[in-house]
Structure formats: structure tokens, C-alpha cells
Length: 257
Image 1 (cartoon, rainbow, N blue to C red):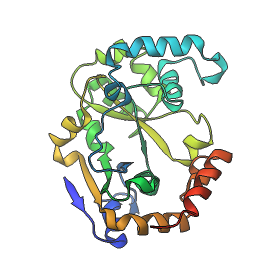
Image 2: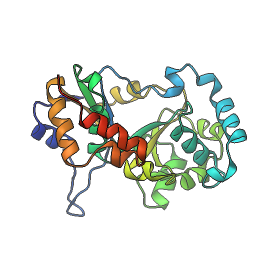
Image 3: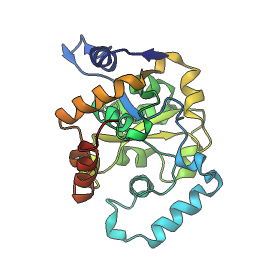
């Protein structure tokens, strides 16, 4: 379902819709967020956009072979997959965040896209969990959890082949190890589809209750960007280090045309 907002206030209301939890009397959203600078951007993974689907296992095997072993936190395929994704290897994973403001940043980080509408994909992980095969649902239930860790995943499947053999089309979310400050500061997690070929958009759009897509009009992007900067949602925080600092300063001092 697409929701088009017309103001900063409407955007705030849209990202926090359905976050009230009567049982615990708290505002705790069950949505995760992904920001894209153009509404035309799909949810295709880097495997799919780069035509690497057939090479998924070879890519990961080679990465594990040549990477420094101490770089990974636990010798599990899910930790290696997380590390590979974090460093730019094509994988079936997509980046998401618990924070709608982090997602807004990625929808408004580049002025070159300010003539185009952007979007925030918002997916309800409690509802996607209902699509999971029984072994995965049992793990969540036994750990009283809604989101997987790599350790939990490893209890069900120790390889991509084992995972793909679970059967059915589904999508789960898992938290990677805290590889560095970037992962931590971006409040990041990954989506993991049941197959490298699975189209996440087709899966979601066939089940409207699982998601909403918030459209940020082009004429609202400057206001969103400036207010995110005021709230310290910037490259300086999300990409700690001198590179992030330079990106933030370059954008901050750009003259609006």
C-alpha cells in the first residue's frame, strides 16, 4: 500500500502508525524501514541487479577463503554473509533499519535525486514471521523473540543449501553482529529471503497487510533533509570516521539551486 505524505508532520504520523502496543502500554513499532532516493527503486538485491544469482555460493566461498579469519565473529555462514554484505559483496541480503529516521536519511542523502520522489519501505516483521516455516517459527517462540540473530539462524540451518531447503516463499529479518560502529549507529538489520531468486516486491505486494510504502514528494525532500541534519541524523553519525565527516560537510555546505 502506498501512502503519499504532503508535509513533515504527515511523514512523522505515517512512520509511527500502528506503533501502540496495548499489552505492554508502550509505543513499540513492529516495522523496519528502508529508504530509497527514487520511488522507482526496487527491492532487488545486489545478487539480482548484478546478475550474480547463479554465483552466490562461489562469491561467498571465495570471500571466506581470502578474507582474514579474525574479521568474522564466529565461523558461521550467517556471520560471513553479514560481513560480506557489509563490505560490498553481492548477496541476497538487503539493509534495513529499526529507525525511520535512518531510512529518511538514505532517501534524502543525495541532492542529485531531489527532483524525484523518494520512498520509505516499511515492513511489519511480526506479520512476515507468520510466513516462516515451522522450524524457524519454533526458534522465535523458544527464544521469545521477533527478530533472529545469526546464532538463532545457525540452529536451524548451517548453510545456504540447508536454508533454501526449508521450503516455501518467505522473508525473515536478522540482526548481524556488531561488526563496527556503522552497523550499531544505523540501528541496522538485514532481510534474508528464502531464495536468491525471490522477488521481495512480488512477495510483499501479493500481501498488502505486510507493508506500506511512504512516498516522500520531491518538493518535500529539502525540508526533510534540513530537519534530519538538525536532529543529527547525518553521515557524521551514520558513517563514523573522516569519510563520513567529509560527506556530511560537503552536503551541508552545498548551496541550494
